[in-house]
Length: 259
Image (cartoon, rainbow, N blue to C red; front, side, top):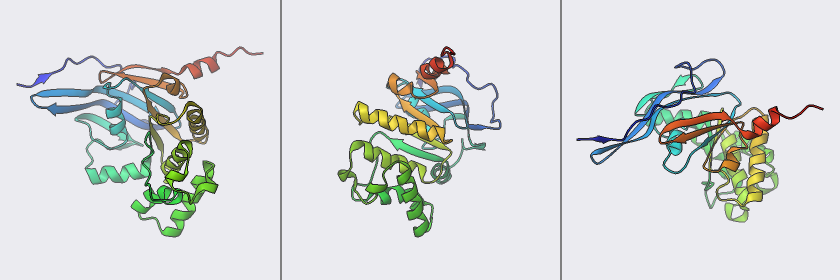
């Protein structure tokens, strides 16, 4: 007999089930359940979330809260057990692995804590990789990769390999790789986790610039100080949304006294 954990009522941050104009991400009653022996573990328990174009959102939560599971679903790295997910108006809830891979490569740029760079490849080649996967011609690949490396101030490090770069420079290469397909979403998983505080601040300032240039930014983190760089903070706890509110950064800005 299967044993199920108790299910809490989630906070709804989406009044309508489906997407409306300007929505980039909409989830409706999103569940993810894992079978572990004779037990069912509900990693997500009916998450309703709506993220608009050019929002800057932090998804927070402690280890085991479900935030990584939500990131995997948003990033089309996994499929939900129940519920629906729309990405840029397309229902991707029931796509197969190949279809998920195609939409993932087109719509989402990933930035990981561990950089995930090829050790023997140059910065330029690492940034070209998503374009190789989608069949972009070589000359166009090189031109686009050079342009995004220059946009993150690494124009002079294009031919350097990861072991010839600092941690911050490696993360900039990873960000350039995330940008090279002009995705609608930048999804960053603990992007400063392997960086010292000063370098982390520089990387978060770069996300500010990307947001100002029109990118939708989603940062997944367990660090409150990193979450506060975002304009909106969504907190996940026990597989449900525990809170969803403007960050202190936006609250402070909106309550500045006028002179």
